[in-house]
Length: 267
Image (cartoon, rainbow, N blue to C red; front, side):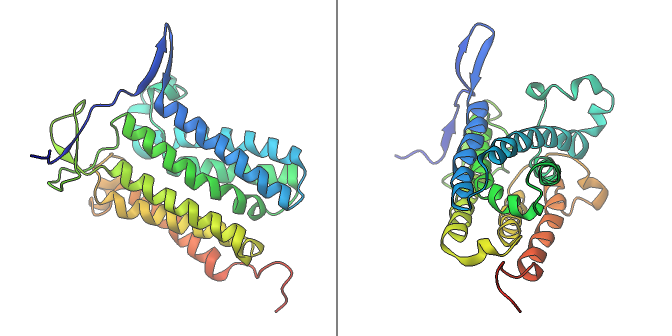
């Protein structure tokens, strides 16, 4: 007789050497950035952009993503606790990270980058960075799976996961749902950049990224347990993650439908 559900009891740690512990989440988080560096480097080469711009962009993205994700968690999901324990806000290893905050942090960091380094429109760099960012999102959700966190709602579907370290309830493996969605988004964005003329239309790929990633986020939130935040102020009709995602989707649609014409084309 086949097991009806998948029992999940993976250790979040890969190896521990004294005070140093290598965790799956950290490894996958770093892998996402390194993969992004490789992919964007190819884009810089084909567009003949100075490589020094790439090195600086990488630093801006890492700092913006980490600070934004941490502050996003603090303000969007955990302000009640964090406001009373401000000394713990910088402790990323002990706290949470929020993808919406990470997105905002990256956009703000690249706005500064565009002003200080490339001297180009922020859309020039955003249309490149968002392609591997979708892949990084896939890696991060796999890290959440290894941590047995961001749990789905209880279900009786045959592919449900029982997260042993949390409880004995079969649940939707929403980490996998999101990871696969973001992986598919990455392949689509990659195809659009390399094999269509849309890369010459400033903001289109950035807009497509927002629609795909945050559209999927809205969908899969229906299968997640509540992560708290300010959803109760809106009658718990939508989760905090969904409420935060709606503006991103709207902005994405704007850039796709009403953005600038492809560079080099005249009206």
